[in-house]
Image (cartoon, rainbow, N blue to C red; front, side):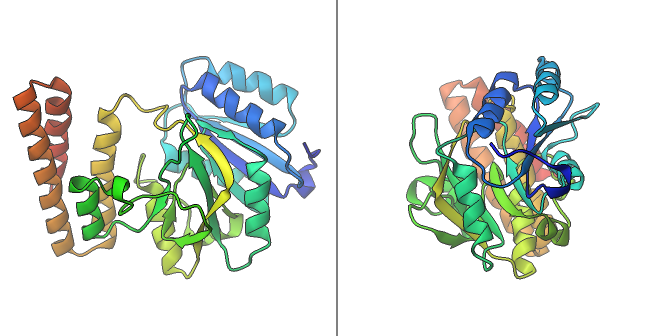
Length: 300
């Protein structure tokens, strides 16, 4: 672990904490045990956790000069909290890392060297693994209408149509927000995350705008991170509803009214099909989830 000097921080690692005390501690421990050859800092933004996370973070930041803690008085969401961390950071490079990740085999060092040694790479993401060591789809194409259709109706992840995990370095449209490395100047040029997105689709929107400015995004599979996924979400319903909201927001912002009309038609069809199955099976989860999803798709 490299000693830190406030005037010479090279890399800032930004982590958002929200009611994931043990998981966040495991993430921090994995960073501190990892070999990172440049001076670095870790900035943790806690979104008003109530599970003892704040006390844990205060204790660990008091004993580790690498770690700085920002305490929010309410949950401001993923996008705004990351913007806070980036604004407060001192490093030339910025790594956004989810609290439910674990750094494997000096992955931060590998990802940093990949970006630093390749000036044609502006944003980079590592290879995310499930807790059993299997590949986790964590990059893919932007959500055009055919891609959305594949995601909703064709098990797009299974066929590699929507999200995938290559075994070779690959230029892609987006990488998972659980692990994104870039220069701080690139984030600032793209104007950071859109704070109108509370959770989900925020990295897609960020990297869509980055592509429009000519930045290039790469997936680098030699840097491995375990990613638990949805650790601070409330069950399966919440992520589904946020994905629905994310699609609608993304299309309203970047696509034509006709594209929005087609998107909403697909979202409604998916919700109605899931509701039909839920009622046949007497499945309260499907019924409650997709009744709410349908109402999102029907909003003006």
